[in-house]
Amino acid sequence: RRFVGANREDIRLTIGDHDKTDDKTGSLQLRFPKKIISHKHFNKPVSLNNDIGLVELDSPVNISHRIRHICLPNIRFIDDNFEATIASWGRSPLNPTIKLSKVETMRNRICMKKNTRYWNYKTLQPGQMCSQPKGNAKKCWAHRGAGVMIYENRHWILIGLASSDNGCGDYPRPQISTRISEYIGWIKKNVKKATSCKDGSDSICMEVKPKGG
Image (tube, rainbow, N blue to C red):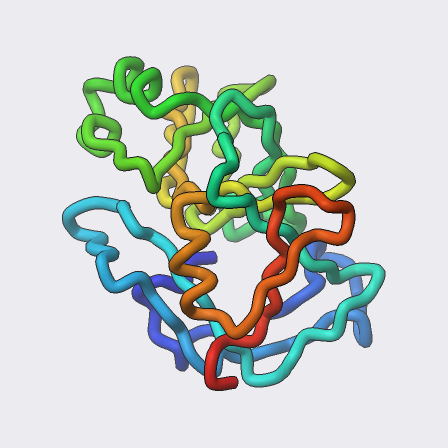
C-alpha cells in the first residue's frame, strides 16, 4: 500500500504476510513507522512524478526463509522492454492473497503515443515508467504501491513502484510506476549505507537503517 502522503499514525506494516487465510502466528512481524521520508517534489494533485518515499521502522526486521531483502537497480540500469512481475493484493479488499501478474515494460514515448487520450500519459517524466499486462488483460491486476520486479543474476530487483491503478475491462490502461533507477541517488542520500549484491552484479542491496537511526 501507499505511504507517500499518508499519516504515520494510520500505518502499520505486517511483514511476511501473503495469505490472509493462513494462520502464520509466529512467522509474521508487525512494525510501525518511526519516520516517513517523502520526496520533497512529490505533488499528487498535479502529477504522479516523484511518487516515492522511505519508511524508517520502529525496530529492525528479522530476515528469515519467508522474509528477504530485494535489490535495487544500478543508476545505469535500463529497465525498458523487460518482462516483469507485479506483486499486489489487488484492487478488491476481499482478495485473500497477494497476486503475481506478468507485465512488460515499455519506453515512455511508446506509452504516451498509445495513450494520448489519458492526461497522465501525455507528460511522462524520466522518473516514471510504463508497463502493460500479459495474458488475461481483463483483470484488475495491480494496486497503487505494488512492486514491479524482475529476476536477474539470481536476485529479485525492484525496478518500479506502481503510482496508478490500471484500467479494467476489455482495454486496460498501462500501469504508471515510479522508475527506481532514477532515484538511486536520492535513496542513497537518505539511508546510512548501501552494499552491492554479492554476486558482483550492478544491482544495489540497500540496508534498511536510515540516517540518524
